[in-house]
Every structure is written in structure tokens, then in C-alpha cells.
Image (tube, rainbow, N blue to C red; front, side):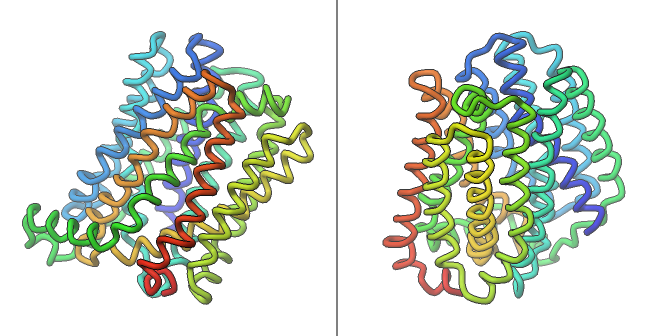
Amino acid sequence: MLLYAAILFLVEFVRGAFLISFLPAYGVHRLGLSTAGVGIAVSVHYVTDTLIKCGAGYLLDRFSLRLIAPIGLACSLAGLLMMLAAPALWLLALAAALFGVGISPVWLGGLSRVDSKRRASHMGVIYTCWLAGLGSGPVAINFLLDRSYTAAYWLMIGLWGAALVLSLWLGAAGQDQVTGQLSLRRQLSLLGERLRAMKALLPGMMMQTTAASMLVPVMPGFAASNLGLSYSQYSLVLIAGGGLTMLGLIPMGKLSDRFGKRWFIVLGYSAFALALFGLTLTRSLGMAVLVASVLGISYAAVLPAWNAVLAQYVPKEQKGLGWGLFSSVEGIGVMIGPVLGGWIADRFSPAMSVLTSAGILGLLALYYLFVLFGALKLKMEA
């Protein structure tokens, strides 16, 4: 698990650095693309990531992660290497798509190792590794972007190469023999039954990822135009939010295991929506750090509880394919969000994209409170 945690950290470090900081800045300021154009490239990345999840999960149920992960990471490295030779949007989108190939096997490999008796606690551990990389990546790259795009780019290449080398020592996934005896058609039929059983969850799964991913192409521009922050100051804001999320994930996971998931999800999303609204009214670095701290705590409350609820629907004998399918459903929102957020930012303003995201999350909190818990009360309280 230590080796896996190191690989997950490196992978998410580079993905966060690339999608949140490097691509928006490089695409707009060096390639002269619009924010909407950058949003398209980000969405294409997530389209690839989403489409490959089910296939990656199916393969992970049958073959060792030691085989699947290096192949995927090598494809992603090729996508990163295409970046500097991507003067046009279509080529940039192609590079972003190829970059999305190698992340799913690493991510699904971790989710399939969650202990059913301590779901939220173990989800907290996985998401701590994920967030440590995802948060520190943009922070480190923002400091470098103030000085050199080239240095930032080659740092990402080097760290991804390190993850690829480490993946060669990953152990086998520990496939269940029952899975190997089931045909793909039968497995999909069983997963279809699970999707029907969790149909009340599906709207929320897509809405929350849409709202979150809307912010990816607009936040650097929002930080500069509305908050008046440099890249380095923006990094301080990310440190505050990401640091508190990372510190809170494991304690929040343990608390939700003990007291139930319901109010962690409702109050977490409510606070998240209010904090995003407050961010549009902020005009100083100190207030931005404070609001980011509230966002971080809210996110820490939601993530372990939500994924622990979702984990209850993953069949024991189909963990790879099950997580792949559910992640693909969530990925629909990730495909929509960057394009929508970029379009709103270009049509109106970056602040309007942030407000729209806050509105979606507020509606989502109400949905979970009045609709979802009526249908899934026992599951949510478990």
C-alpha cells in the first residue's frame, strides 16, 4: 500500500498540476486559446478517462495491476510529451485525451482494495493520498509558472516517469476466481441491476462532478481578475483549502463510520455552496484563504461519506468493473463541467461560473435532504 500510495500521489500531483494550473495558463497565454477552448481540452481529457474506466476495471478483475498500470501510464506519458508540439486546439485536445488513458487503472486499483467493514475510514486514506497529490501539484507548478513554463513542464514529465517506473513493482490485484467464471454479458447484467437499485443516486453523481469540474478551467482566471492574486498567491489559497481537506479526510471518515453518512453529506455540500458564493464577494488574500479553508473542511466531510455509500453497491466479485462503471457515471458530469464552465466564463465572467457551480451544489444539498434520503435512508445511515 505504501508503494501504491506513492504512485497515486505522483499521478495526481501531475494531473492536478496539468489540468488546474499548467493547461489553463499555457493554453491561454502561450497558445492564445480562449477559456472555452481550454475547457474543451480539459473535457476531452475526462471523456477519455471516463470511457476507459469500464474497460480498465474489467481488465483489473482479470490481470495484475502490475501489467495494466505501466501500459496505461506509458500512454499518458506520450500524451504529456505531445504538449509542447501542440500549437493548435485539436492537437492540444488529442494530447489531453492521451494523457487521460493511464489514470483509471491506478485509481480503480486503490478503490478495489477498500475494506467493507471500514469503508469511510479507508476512503479517507485513499482520498488523502489523492488530495495530497492533486493539491500540491497546482501549488508547486504555480510557483514555477511565475518563472518558467519549461521548468514546470519538465517537472511534470519527470514525476510521471517516476510513477511509471514505480508501477513496475506493483503486486497482483488479487482477482476473485468467481469473477473469472462470469461472462462479460452476465457481469454487465448484474451491474445493471445495481444501477437500477441505486437510481436515486444517479442524478447526484452527475450533478456534483459537473459543479466541481466547472471550476477547473476558470479558477486561475478568476483568481487573477476577481481576487487580484498572482500565481504564487493563488497557491497559498490552494494550500489552505487542500491542506485542511487532506487533514480532515481520515477523521471525517472515521466520524461518518461511527455516526452515519447523512448529515456529513448534506451539511458538507451546503457549506461548500455557501463558501463558493462567498468567494465571489472576496477581494483580499486573507479572506480568500479563509473561504478556501471552509471549502476544504466541507470537502473533507463529503468525500469519505459519499464514497462509502457508493461502495455499498459495488459487487465483491466485480470490484474493478463495478468501480469503473460507477466512476464512468460520475465522469459524465466531469465531461460536461469544463465546457460549461469555460463557456459561461467567456459569455459572462469567471465569477458567473463560480456562482453557477455554487447554485448546483446548493440544489444538490436540497436533493440529498428531501429526495435521496427518503429513497435510500437505510443505506445512507449505514
